[in-house]
Length: 254
Ligand code: SF4
Image (cartoon, rainbow, N blue to C red; front, side, top):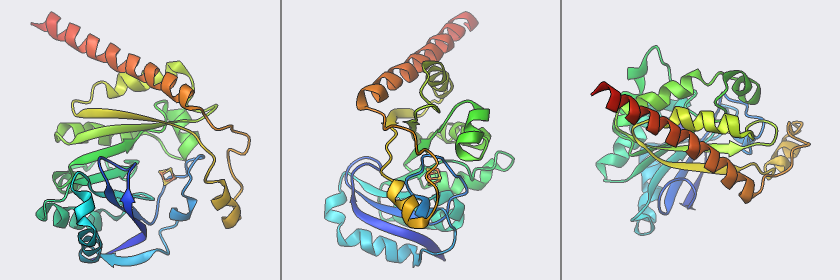
């Protein structure tokens, strides 16, 4: 089987724990207004590669990956589910830590079992939740967040470690009410291990210009680290409220 690969990075440090071999999959059905990888959107293009070829690239530098592993990102890796599953199963046979960086948009809540083989070969999922309010999510990404939240529940039910990523975008995800609501929702996920709150930046702008696509957030200013930290505090408040209510409910039910 061959995957359609946009590119690879030998020494990734922001896509999971440790130093990682990062595989960028070609193709994404979402159209997030702040996407900084519009060159990965099209399912066409990219380079056809086998799992064995990718793992051979990993092996060449494996001395550097002892606390890291392999990360599949994109684009949207789950758009190529059979190939992604083959890659992760082959990696697990070699004892390699596997991390899936995904939007979760390809998960089908009517057929949740379709991703179970993939999850069985995945050590960590980094799931991007773009906006907890569904109508805003549709405007921000072109899709409902229903599949994404259902995938979060499936990951948790399969006991796979989960990191949630959330980008603070001016005018879109920057109110404490939305952030706390997000926290309340993800506070119910049993395998939640980390929360990564990222400030919006406009470094992808030049790619839009090169591709001749209007940059959708032309007026948005980059968000500071300080603002991102305040947003993280609001999300954590929501998580704590959920945990408190769950434990109170447990105590009442005893
Ligand atoms: S899911 Fe990721 S790659 Fe796809 S449009 Fe959104 S930010 Fe870009």
